[in-house]
Image 1 (tube, one colour):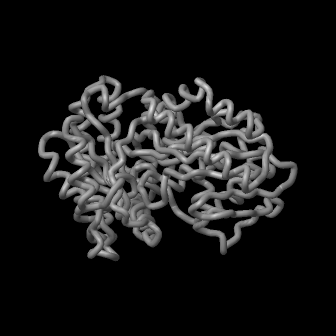
Image 2 (cartoon, one colour; image 1 turned 135 degrees about the vertical axis):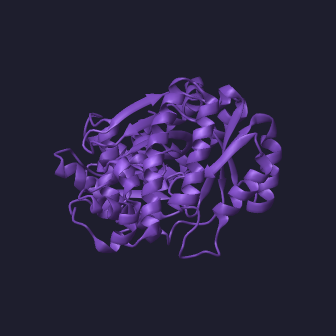
Image 3 (cartoon, one colour; image 1 turned 60 degrees about the vertical axis):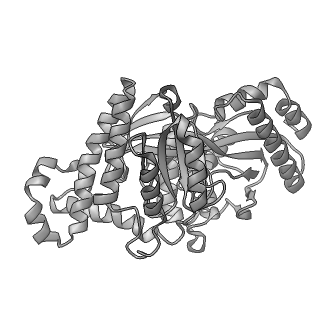
Length: 428
């Protein structure tokens, strides 16, 4: 639609349904806030790229519910998409030029006639734009140019997986404009992971991309890396009188790639002892029998503790999926709490070993626990080391909790979030 037609849609009653679906709210003030955001972002896109046949795409962030750092070992996870998103206005072009802009990273432009890895582009926006086109072409899919402008709410360093949010957004652009929307959410997630591994240069697992692409609560068994088993279901903490909150400690992830990379690398050290690639291929009973042998052989106690976390966490993710099906909120919360404790003690991803004086996540967990007592849970969120924690708290305590925590981490550092039922999607 040209901008005038899009504005009519944004100002219509149909837009209210979009807000209810994507942002999980029917409140008039939330609808109006999103209406103004959409109109402003559209105007900025047109100012930058001129008018044209624009489409609107929303790509959400994600929270991890259980299965902390199990995905890269082809284990089990439970994660969910949330109502915080990146909003993108995009139009197709008849050339091979891609331009993507936002207020955080500015305008990034590439020519996708050249799809080789550019070393100087690693860890930046261009690597995702080029890498996605390269993978699509390698798989026999169509590619072409576009102009896109986004408003970012899934901020870098927020712990809500800004990289996967952006990656899945780009796969959806190529899918919608050049492949008749025929590439399903699972394959788009796998394409995005490949791009992050091979072009962006980060050895991530597949959980973030899958949760964002598929949407809602999603349980994933990654054992068969080519055909992960996925179970999607609807569940709301609000139905049981709880609010999910994310606390942004405002510690960035930018220089922590080596810390993240060490986790899968060390887990694979243990797997290698058994002659296999990843821990999901190891008999956990054998592992627990062999602790002393492992210590002598690999001489890395942290690797053994991280493997210990993996086996227990993998089982927790399966148990949590069962609890979600049974709508057993007490068990859901108990498993999430155990998961967080294991991440802190055994996975050791609450603070970076390379920077022990910076422990914002640990401070957030300590102060949240002090406030919560037995009225909820808190835990490290996602990859860890910096960024965010999750808190699930009884509704009547939320306002006071936010006020207390903002004194430590600053205004707007605590984000109430809801689980949205859709993954990355073209709205119109």
